[in-house]
Amino acid sequence: MAESMVDAFPFQLGGLRDENACEDVRRSLGPLLARYLATKKHKNDPLLIQIAFQTSFVQILKYVIGSWSLSSDDANDIYTNTYERIRTGEVQAVSGRWRALAIAYAPSHDESELIAQITPHLAGRFANIMLAAGCSASLDVIAASAENKMSDRIALLFNLATKLKKIVMEEITSADLTTIAISGGVVYSAEEMEDAYIDGDPATGGVRALCTTDLGLKRITRLATSGGGQWDVKMLIKPKVALETVVNSMDE
Image 1: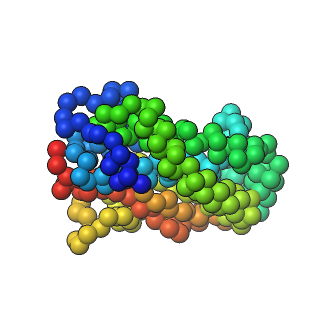
Image 2: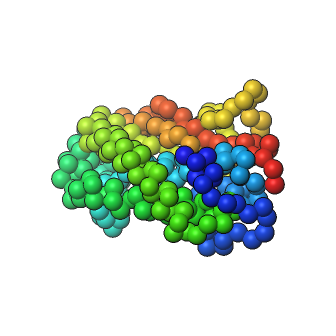
Image 3: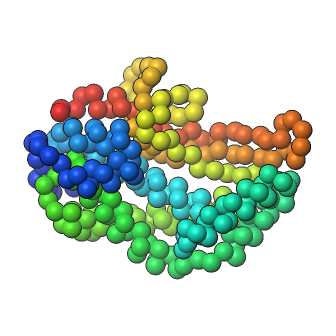
């Protein structure tokens, strides 16, 4: 995907980047990844752009899977705050059942309408990534190309995410399953994450994660409402991350 986008458009060899695009990438993907996108050459090696695309998908999928209502952020906040109070005051069977019923009866939009809203949003995100990386085409042209190339993939991933949402938020009540993503700039820990691009020796101490490329999954179970050992927390699947070492071989 990134390779075809990079091949389709010209890139600057140096100079200023689109500041609005850079600010969008810093805000959405973090300053570390944004800095490398702006300072590395990508025409012959689009790996970093591919990683930025992938973590953008991850962010959307995490939101869809963990959302109470995709139609309203305000409703999400209300459900989230209410559930946290129930979760800390009731046994797992009660809180899990409440969660399942709330999800089942929460207002929702038609899936095709939601996909139609998300697709241009993601296409715009991809366009800003390309501009921050030095692409000299216009935002509208890049976004239109991204939407054309990826609309089918976005629809497929959204469909899979909604199925996972139903399993995680509605069907499983004996525990809480939470998707896990690692923020850019966090120091790598093999206990909490996996290196998605490991090549030979494992990462050394102090190496930072650029972003999450694959979501992790954590299980949290309420064992008791008082006393010690109230919660059982287990990482079922570690999130995969791209480390800043992936840029070492890239030209500036």
